[in-house]
Image (cartoon, rainbow, N blue to C red):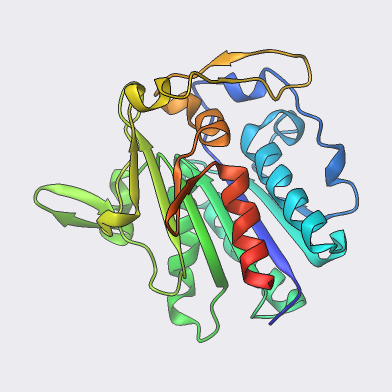
Length: 258
């Protein structure tokens, strides 16, 4: 079993809404890790994006628990976009990571909105290759399915289009919301879906306050709040438990290496 872990985080497109780039995070723990920034990531997103921070937090918890070295981890940070550029860059980054760290390196992948479509597109590009990434956990959040990719990424069932997950992905967790903004696509494996509605979120009476500037955000079942919701409210089915995003990432690593 390879001692290396590759963490891929793909943001949404952020074209019409910039809530997750208004407030910064303490990303100092990233120092010492191996990091690849894909070209689509804006400079402000490197310190102001919820998914980047929460994935880092989950990895740090696991690394400390395992008494591991930062050099055994590689972060690939990217952002979904319209067009083919982001998925091609991601595919190439995954290929390079497998070449350097080995084909059996443990992969943890997180994606939101357009980032889901680009992540799944990159993974389908491995179909013609004998060696595929060793994906232990894929976490998708309110994924957007571009109409032009329906035939490639989805399957129609009872009049609805559902994301298809490559069969070499070991575990997959899909979280979608049902109130405002884009309503994310479900995946064809029905037991892998968790639908967040406001009455579930209200049970926890939580706010999101992980920002450097002390800003607090009330949590609403909106497409634009998904990163914050899954970070503090149990939303990801993991074995018999439901975990927050950082905890799911942490457990995906600690259970793999123990």
